[in-house]
Amino acid sequence: MLNIWHQNLMLCFTPEQFVSFQNFTKDLDFDDRNFPFPDGSKRVVLCTPNRDINLVFTEEEWSDFNIAMLEASYLLDAYNLIYSSR
Image 1 (cartoon, helix red, strand yellow):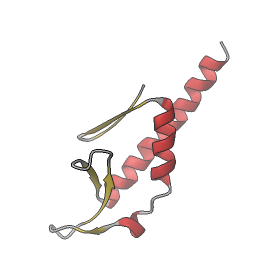
Image 2 (cartoon, rainbow, N blue to C red):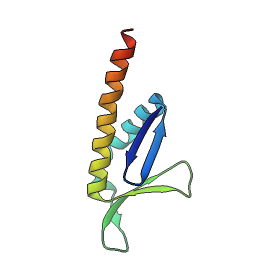
Image 3 (cartoon, rainbow, N blue to C red):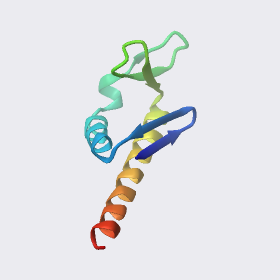
Image 4 (cartoon, helix red, strand yellow):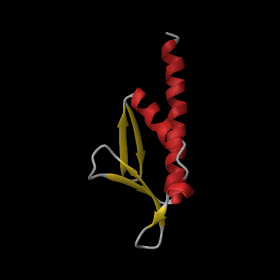
């Protein structure tokens, strides 16, 4: 199980779910997907399978989130190398 923790958000994935989610999010461009919120900030909204729950990110949060996903991907690769050689 992989856990991605970022501020008040914690996502839990199997390795396969993580790879799928990362492939989906890494190609999303903030500038193409953002829209203004009532507070004047621009944010990206990621819909979840539960239509009542969505993830919302400012540009800085989106960047931090994608960096965390990339770091998790590197760790997953390292774990796979370690455990596949046993």
